[in-house]
Length: 536
Image (cartoon, rainbow, N blue to C red; front, side):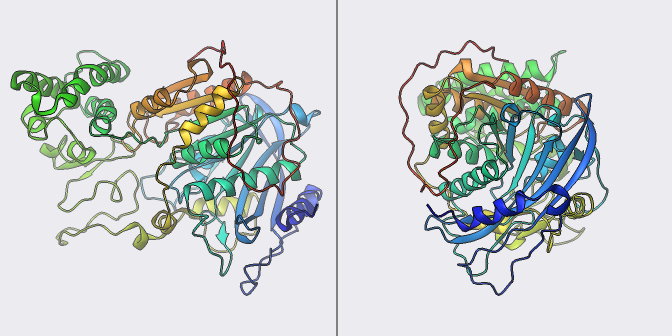
């Protein structure tokens, strides 16, 4: 059977010794037809560091992978940034983790350069992507697991090919097909088909990870990590129910409620209990709710989320995210962030709430005296560069990147098709029930109103994730749950522990040998989901 062009090219360059591979930098011609597969560029360097208290050497390899559409035509180049521990005798027993972020037009740079990679970029002000540099990251779990960061097409240094039709690629299912192609290619080219494997996604990347598992039952994983889960809560009631505990945590952080000696963990838990009992019951009753009970619920909400009871009643007990963000600090002339409710900015007319989120930092603060107006659309913002990450890849890892490194590309977001009726998390839960050895790690931040913590837990419960296969971890942090030295250590230690106990001795077939096999719908068989693992 003839091997796809992208696999032939990738295998050829990755089979080179590391000292030689760094010179394999053939670049795709700008005039090359979209139907021709360019030779992927690659660089490899030898490095050393201390991770998890262990001194070790590792090889860092940055490589392009040609992504094909369902007809086998090349449409783009995705970049992988891999860190592989040297001196490992039995690669078949060494776990490997594939990681990506969300957006869906985001590069892997948050997980890569803020959490898991061997180097970390010190935290800068929101929107500051150009200043500063990088420093060793002793919290990186590279001592326990090899790491492969994936920049999807349109992000990082990854680009579409000239003339390629990316409509299918920029969709829920098409994007997951591309991600699976990259994973299969890396496993095959590096001889790691038998290694224990893990899949980690953050934000929209959790949707991508769930869809990869759902649509590729033959590409068996030992564990999936969902960080800041991009869960949808349908209906008239649940969007408000699942957001309330995060609003409560934000009110606690800003001192807008009486803490009464409670920690944020305790206040969040109190809000969850109220949300899933009295609050949801009141919302379901709607106009039938007696006025006295409506007032009681509004006053209880006020004590939790820091807004006046009269305003809560005026909103019919249904607080939108903007209702809370634009009112909780209104007396101070401030609004909160969405990705991080502890961050503030001036409250101004015409704010959108999301695209002008001060924690995101892509819309400049309005100049004094400037007229109010709507913020720019995602398409108008387009790609946002991350020069520090680009310099790290070119200067430290010696990758010959061409053009800017896109930390996030809002043009991709604007072009995205979110497929209706497709719930990848249901497929992930089904895969877990079919395979009791498949474990799930879920991490959420109390201060994340973009993907609220309780929304993730509600979704996991509703789709039927087996509790015995789930490890849950809450952090007093934002969308990037690992922000802050304490959170980073807790997060990476939890990742190490999860990898260590997630079926590392599962008998394995070489599932990725038939790389030319077309994408198939998943087929699962019912099996017992009994698993005695502890739930954190």
